[in-house]
Length: 330
Length: 257
Image 1 (cartoon, rainbow over the protein chains, first blue to last red):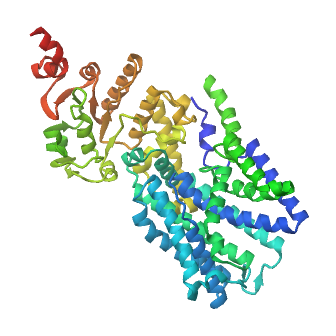
Image 2 (cartoon, chains in turn orange, cyan):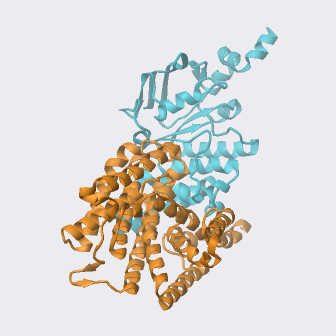
């Protein structure tokens, strides 16, 4: 028999040794970044912004197990939505962020409905095309997007007359938002809804046989990922103050994929861990000078070889061993 | 009362006729088996009933509802739950979580309730976990409940899939070759579980290759061969039916003749 204590605490965050170490590590890291200041603050700001994107992408790619190479399209909607509404219509930043998210959500619903009938490689190709089309639109529709010039002078995040100008405060704000994103992800994962998503990832026929409406759940996961992506696009615009088509181009797809897989696709905190690690790593290997790209790639490859389920799953490995041992004896 | 009523069910794959005019009545509460040699069309028949394959002609009625060519999730929602010959466990989820997914149809709630968690949310989660524990106890997998489902040995995967199906509280449980690939000991354990499920009031429709298992536990048996139903009756009738003997032991019969 299993002890009921183990099962009954499952839906809440477990404060065991691994998580404590992880949280302390994160706190030390942030304290260091705060003390050091300067460029590292910007790096961490971007890490949090990409983190939000990855937490969203994880709903679709991690929990539900579907491939999307086009989530940058929704980040572009968020970024441009925010830029246009704030710069041209002087809208409140928070309101612009929410409005863009609604637009991105509706767009994801409309695009996802036919696209999500595809599976595997075909779905990957279709979503990839979605990202490319959005990039082309952002370049060509100059009357709306100002083409390659992009938008400058986007105001920082704030409410009413209070705006967050200080770079350290911006980082605090972004970190809080990323943690809220993480909290939502954790809540949704540990529920009937989250179980249905993960069941689809595990076996579509199996899920269908238990009455799970596969296409509906895939679509919801896709829309959630788009909402997160849009929010991250808006946050980028507010934080950096400038956007152009390149920001939401192929680079974003590659970077976010790296983050997701380095951190651990399908785990709760993995996307955020991956975003931080993959953002800091280039700064760490910068000292190798000409070889920095080689060093960066080599370290990423080593991570993927020795921690194929991501850095976050390495902790889980120790955790599950500890839990399993007394049970196998029983 | 007839729970499942199949009339003239036919499946054609281009020129090949996999099922031809099959009629079947599964009474409520029975343990019914469909048997037949390899390639007789058992799995095709089964897939059409569970909605995984559209039929070419004929009708399927479940509990008074026409379920012909209905989507799988709608059929499942009516209480017709299937298992798979190649077990379809949810990889990356624990044994207990697999069973919890089975409760999907008998629970409610989506994104909003997961996020805001009203008091019924916690109550339902507790019920789901209790139910999973109960069912794992029932099939004898409680010791493995926190383990990854993909780490289970083959025989236990079958049992887990069955526990998961039971979590949906099926009115009719469709088992697709549950004994395939199991050793004698595992088959015995499985037979016991199937009989227990039936004894608790769930109608079971079993598709099986293993004649010994079927004649031991089924109350009524239909035999398919070359896509047609060639016989139906009690296990004793089936064992003596000349067409069935010919279908199963055709080669030997020819040698004796």
